[in-house]
Length: 63
Image (cartoon, rainbow, N blue to C red):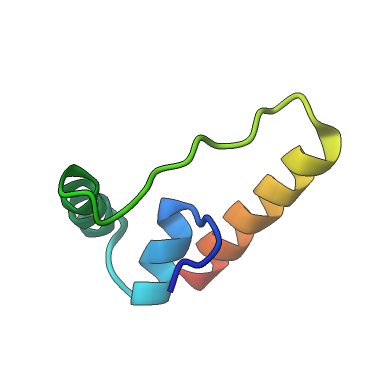
């Protein structure tokens, strides 16, 4: 499902799960090594910031 990095909100929307439940499940998966967590992009880059905001908006729309 996540061949590319996704936000927790995007994962939540794709799984049709409440955000808090998704956070708990992902937290458990991180603890067992099933999921790798990447840092979010910095807010200093204009185009990367825009891409991040578009991904967040897309995830919110799917909620």
